Image (cartoon, rainbow, N blue to C red; front, side, top):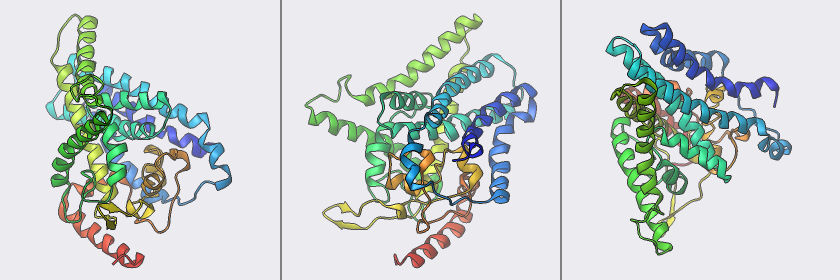
Length: 361
């Protein structure tokens, strides 16, 4: 992989810089990160286009082990924790101004913690090293979505594209209906998965060995420490710290669920009997090869290969011609999903056309 392409994965770090710069410039500049993500990135995707090139199969093992790519994801963890602390401080004790500028500030921070942060947590959470799994949990703790660590790996990846998966959006289901179904359903799924794990070991669900107990408590502990730390630093208590933490968390995991909605809309796996389904393959996720956005999202948009090979590292994810292809990258598709009539008009036709061309109907 060329040096330029390797450095491209540092692109995501421009988003926290835009949030910080937007705050100090003030006013409408607080929307800088949002405007950049949902206007500039789709435009860049359109101008620069797609990249369907796959890594050389002979170099995949070597490329997978390159420490450079891990360094980027590890560094992001520290950046995210720092941006949460800084964001809480300036939101609670600084001056942002009008309420709509505060909305821009919160959206910008959530763009960092949810748009990129949960993407990095997702990448790290699929790996089997203790440090990567720990970093994944830290990132998810900062957005109050730690149960994702359980449900995504042991639930979503098992039941994706089936009626049993709360994170798979159904054909004709609007994002708003899907949102409430998946937020509650994913949490309940994580509870059930953890209960089953404990039952196999004859451990009570009320034990502190229940990860869901810790995953439910730790975000509150983090928020408490954040509030106390800024109180001692400033000498003043501010409820703004608590308001900031939970609002950015809600916005961040809402962004995650918007991405979930896009990634699997209308895709189904065939049932082969007795509640079992065909093996997950690259046909069971929407794919996008838009080069610029893939840099920012650590190639999350090559989602087809990710589901077929969940442990594969982001730098070696592949494109498959037979996978269903999104017309645009995730930022543009999120905007489309927010307007259900337009979403259905574009995606239902695309879904049916792909099924016909693939011989699935």
